[in-house]
Length: 340
Image (cartoon, rainbow, N blue to C red; front, side):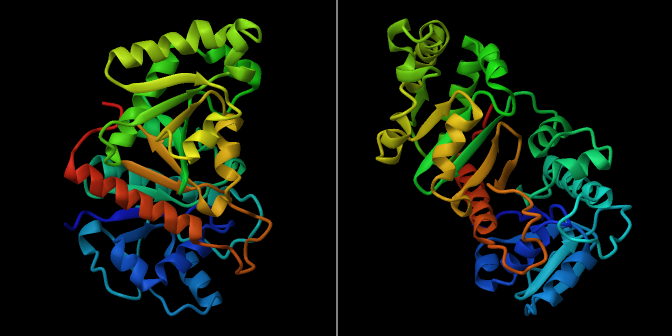
């Protein structure tokens, strides 16, 4: 069954975003199987395709209704009211690039909220460029949640062998511990269960990682696992969620990779991301769980150090786009709003 297209935002024009976008869309067979278009700057993408000598036509459109899905054609929706970007220096923070990236994301959110697209796949943006453009958000997640009116959301990372969702994200370890509560744990466990159901897993097995070494060793290494995490797991189980733990953080991801669990709830940023990134960033996908639409992203940044060299690997963007379509197709079979 065909579904609405997914919008790919171009990302920061000074990074590798435009390069991995045009490389992805130059793969006609892949795009035919994963119908998509780009929101961004036509000139930037055309210059990038020319520099890489890709057999790819760039066609500017003004609305989703104009999408024709022609083989070998990258259809680009320009951000309404945005000026064309000049040929910016690559590999450097630029306010114009930050503003353009924000405009593309905001446009994509508007289209998703109105139901014109099935979801969003975002190419990398740069936090300093956003700040230089006076954009009041630190990154994608904050933009997506605020501009869509979402209050209950989380970051989930997946690769072909592992899925993890984070209780706390970008904060110090001291702040991460201070932010833990039974309610915050329970909220993420619920989101983990619902996200797996979105992927068609009827009874997801949710493993909850402990905070302290050996999950606290019965209170010898701290009581957070006993006083906060364990009660949240019990409440989740009472709601019918197959949650278990707290499991020691040094073995729970290994067991998940071996197929014992479908997803791991990680307590803090590095606890969850290190196991995922050990497999390589080209295999990682970032998913914002809890939004009223599907959103995925490659698990890497703008890579200013290699921008403009023509060597950026589009594999992670392709995997992110493939994952977005997988979520959309699963939702169509059994509608369930993550975070509802």
